[in-house]
Image (cartoon, rainbow, N blue to C red; front, side, top):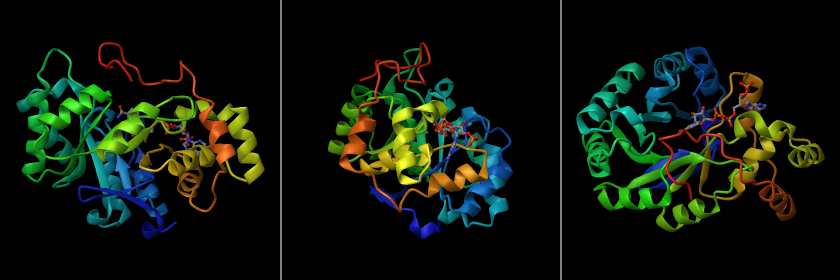
Length: 278
Ligand SMILES: NC(=O)c1ccc[n+]([C@@H]2O[C@H](COP(=O)([O-])OP(=O)(O)OC[C@H]3O[C@@H](n4cnc5c(N)ncnc54)[C@H](OP(=O)(O)O)[C@@H]3O)[C@@H](O)[C@H]2O)c1
């Protein structure tokens, strides 16, 4: 897989490779991130909260891949949603990463403690206007909150990052994003490992000579308007997850995977932080 062969999604001037690399729980991940970049990943997802920003920065420098060729995303955590805290957090992220700008800056979770959304969104837009983030977006917002954020934001929101995999129905949110021209970035695209014992996906994978991870990612890709950010510390898995553009799922296979959605399918649902999901 070469850099140019990973398809990209475009919105408001952003060009986002549809498969990215997740770095939560990877900690000091310099070597892993360098490996991912050498394998062809050009979209890296981190967050202040993951503690992986320093490793991501080290990995970028060690990889030899030019900074401008990488779509780098980080996020401001829910503790820092006051304007002054937000600005400090962005500075710290850039320092951790040792870069001058990120390509995507997200609000990681919607506000708690009654901090006005207008204040947080104002700080997000300011980071873009100050050149610290090329593009901005939100994560873990429900439709009503995205709607409100778009109303408040003087700059276009480019992505909504939210959980999505075959066990979670996100049809309402996806419809909304498509209508509003927002790219949907799917986190936990492999259900954080829960998909690997699924008999339906396993059978489809077997029949096509692919792995469960590849079928799950392909299912996301074929829906359109979705970028996915699987995480792995295993180079074989990393390469596999990039190799999802040379086969397709039939309508019947797509439907069988859609039918796996279940009411308890959500993984990331922190009490006191999660909004009322759609
Ligand atoms: N915005 C948010 O609030 C939020 C929340 C959660 C996650 N995220 C982002 O989304 C990323 C992905 O989500 P996630 O890390 O929770 O889970 P995930 O990517 O759904 O699953 C990761 C698990 O899948 C395994 N895996 C990966 N590729 C594989 C392959 N090709 N074959 C077999 N196993 C494979 C990994 O193990 P190995 O290491 O052994 O490959 C790991 O145990 C995160 O790292 C983070 O960047 C964002």
